[in-house]
Image (tube, rainbow, N blue to C red; front, side):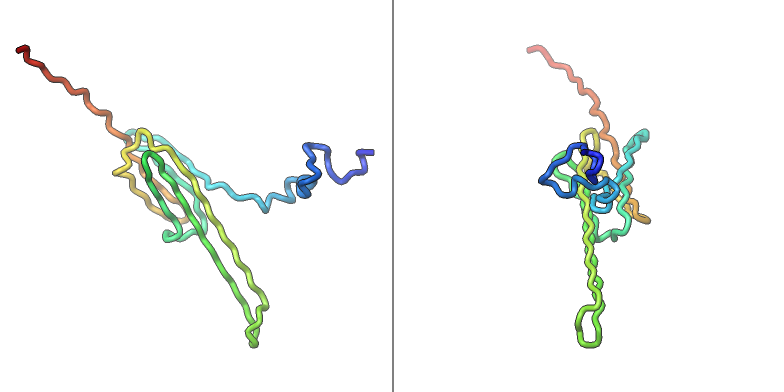
Length: 140
């Protein structure tokens, strides 16, 4: 009896109509991740985040406490109208990303960022360890 059903019996939920479809069918509906590479150098970390199709003005970098948050949002509207002003074609799209990172061990005051060819590069200088202080107390 199960051989004639159009779906596999893997975690099927009758209340989720898209659960029966193959993953390839829904792959277009998933959100692409904001891919980020982080590498460590001697005195800093270098973070490279892929943000293709965004302008510099679309990107926000916020630092609050010890959290760095990267946001990017892009909206497009393409309208084509006939001579009477009626729509022939109207397309809209919105893309947005948001990622947060822990800045423990980073000197947040010296972070710099640049955006070139769809790649956001942040240089995150490491905090310099505080030198232990010593002093001599005089006995009274």
